[in-house]
Amino acid sequence: MTVRTDSWWRWREFPAGVAASVLVALGAFGVADIPRVNTVAQDAGLAWLTYGHGKTLAAVAFWVGVAVLVVCWVRIGRIVGGADASGAPRPTVKQVQIAVLAWATPLTMTVPIYSRDIYAYLAQAQVFRGGFNPYSDGPVHTPGPLLDSMAQVWASTTAPYGPTFMWLGRGVAALADENPILGVQLMRAVLIPGLLLALWAVPRLAEHFGASPQQGLWLALLNPMVLIHLVAGAHVELLMMGVLVTGVTLAVRGRHVGGLAVLGLAATIKITAAIAIPFLFWIWLAHLRDTRRDLPHGDSPRRELPRRELPRRVVAGVFAATAAIPLAVFAAITAVSGLGLGWLTGLGWAGRIINWLSVPTLVGHVITWVAAPWHALNLQSVLVYTRGVGAAALALILVGLWIAFRQSERRAMAGMVWAMLAVLLLEPSTLPWYYTWALCLVVAFTLPLRVRALIVAASTVLLIVFQPDDSIVLYKPLPLLLAFALAALAAASLLRPDPLRLRRLAFTGPHES
Image (cartoon, rainbow, N blue to C red; front, top):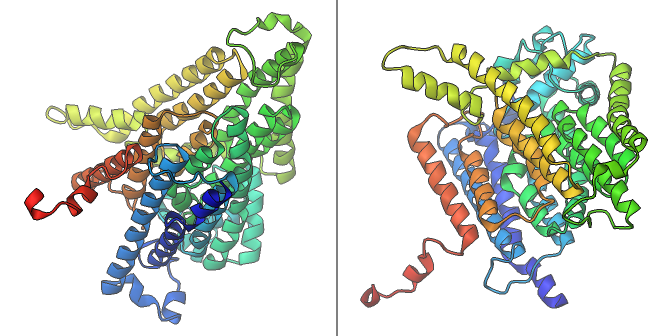
């Protein structure tokens, strides 16, 4: 058996994935988001990659790398999910963890891909470093190469991120001293610990609930969408995801105070992490009920004993602790930062993002399209109403989920995942890297094969409809159809090898056809 397990490393998926990551990293220098008003490429003799045939060559390298990564990921998914009929050995948890790091490493040494957000992080941090408040003053207050390189739609907006991330960014800004290339690499060094934390937490969360840790790592971290968008693209979600799943893992393993404190820290990185906190109240109560019946955590019978079996003072104490611990952490960090709660204002700027990945925006598009033959409705005016309805619906759904999924630890965990998914679908705008909020938590469950195939399809689409130069093709019919077709092929390939039956065609002679 040891020989079969070790032989997995000699399978072509692992080295091919590393080579594909290298192709993505190299191709990005020609097609992704290089700093503006910067002559480093010219000085290094690499300017030819950014135009003409050089850019075409870079694009071919990039997209071939993306395609090979997806193929390798899907093939490994069949192995870890037990859907591979070739008898291939199943990799160990450690092997999948090393594969994640190996695939991610080349992506840490390239220019930002799919987004210029990292330049915005640096520009907002430069505002903080310059003595301004990033929650009330935009990057336009500190003109320079960072402001030039970021997406200009955010130039006058304030930061929506928590005080912990702003403090980390301030340290990066001080070290980089407005050098965008150095700043990008230092900011990645700040974000990569999120990947390392997730590598620790994801398999433990999966094991706790009886799911496959290898499959969890494959789904949430080896996923090319996650690696390219979050590691190469360098988004704050990478750090937030790691801290979020670590806090939840600590809590379900019985370390409730530590888990709540870590989730309070996660909320100071990005407030979305706070969605998970109320569900830890039910998890803590479930653990106390299990303890009273001498059951290990997570082994509660399907029919739970009523919550009134716990004394009211115990329930009240757990509720108070669930609220007070993360709130104390958040308040302490906010007080030390001296920035206040201005990030609340910054959250509203997300409304400037318009794509149909969120339900309220999609409904707004449909309304304007249906009304077009009779009246030209302004999309922005319609979105005010659809997003308002979406916000109200989201609030009701979150409360409903919290109440409905209270019976046990497993149910509370499921409610947490559904809550994150509801936020993704009903908030004003959704971007590919936001999906990690739910992906890092859903690893607690053994998903049906078809659900995993759906995630493969969605991940593939999000690698295509968002382009490496920060453009999108969500509103271009032909590229969109191509993205859906390739996504369907990737999903079908998870369900069964060679869905196009190319091998049979290759080995069929002319007289047999």
